Length: 303
Ligand SMILES: [Zn+2]
Image (cartoon, rainbow, N blue to C red; front, side, top):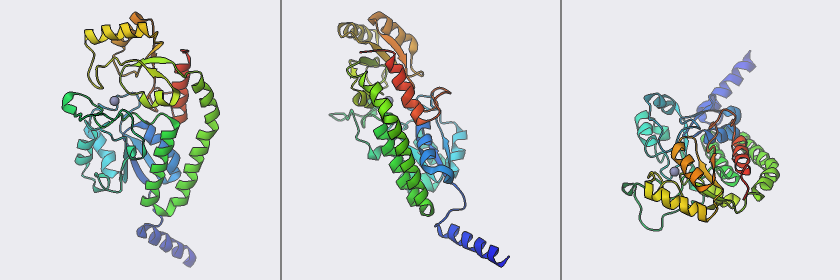
């Protein structure tokens, strides 16, 4: 009995001193891919919830009051940054009145900080011009090299917030890296057959994937990121797609598939509806599923 109470005392002491937390770390992420990465790295020491669903446009998620509840209790918020969530996340974070996750706090993790950002604007661009990628392209989490970078950032932050479980986070990170490595051969083989494939994305959300796989982006359905097409832009785009023999038009399920289908048909290209996040379809339950689904879909069109 004496021994038990001493153990309890020690546990309470450790929990209070922050060496070992008695409660799991509560993580909230903006998108489901980050939630999956956080679960992989956090393991049993964390509870994770994503605010957006994988089938929603991450630029424009409805800032429902119900999303304030997980945010108000969160120890760590993980988001893509580069203005991806600027329309909806900052008001929610402010509204949560949770000091742990406000900008600048240890519980606020902008995952873009470790990423080599693509599509950085040459001149000054601001959102008043309608471009919703004014700080470079925020759709960076699909190539495995970037997912691993984000996983490393999450592990580093969890070690800071919960130093008592630092060894667990390191072990889980190593495990995640090994799981990616185990898939690397299969992914490289599939990627090799796609090199040079000419595509037209609907939204400029595939730059990192195109860079990874060697796809050639020959234009976009949107005039600029976030600016819908007009008939003149579409007519020019169709002509270019025909001239360049573009094989596929890439679109996420939440964009205008009617317009995209007409463009693809007129240009003799295939319309490919691609998942861009874990949870985009019920079958895509984890990060590896997401990469598999994208590569398999692209594999149905050859260069
Ligand atoms: Zn975008």
